[in-house]
Amino acid sequence: MLSALGPSKIDVWLRDSVFATDTKATASVSLAPEQLPTDWNPETDRRLTVWEMTHHLLRIYYYEKQGDAVTAALLCKLGAKADGARDLAYKLFTVCEKNKWRAEAQGYNALVLGWPDLTRLAQERPVRHRADAGKAAVKNG
Image (tube, rainbow, N blue to C red):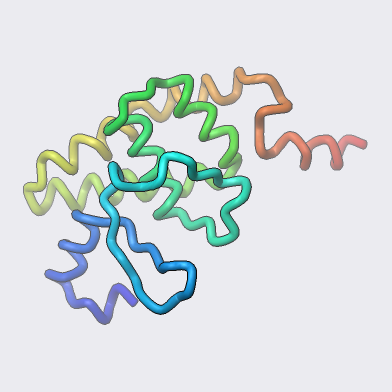
């Protein structure tokens, strides 16, 4: 889909939005990270994407400044899938830097730079809060 947009349109799309489809799949809308729903739960999202994970992490960590503990709690819910969000945040930071979108680059950069502390906090959380905890119990049991 991205390739059909062409290079300049891809840049605008990456800079400005999270791509979401309405529930009836009849239309698509673009949402800036700060416009994403605050009640989002990755454990109940049936269409969980790396793009969506990245921008919800960005929303709570950078735009809403909810702090490391809240962001780490979301990382726990994402489990091993969270690494893809880190990789995408880094890629989007480089795209923003290349295009001189400094304000957008700051958010992605903050998330990437905070990642080591966020993952450490996520790992320190009690096992019952981690998405991968059930998988570990099955393997050990």
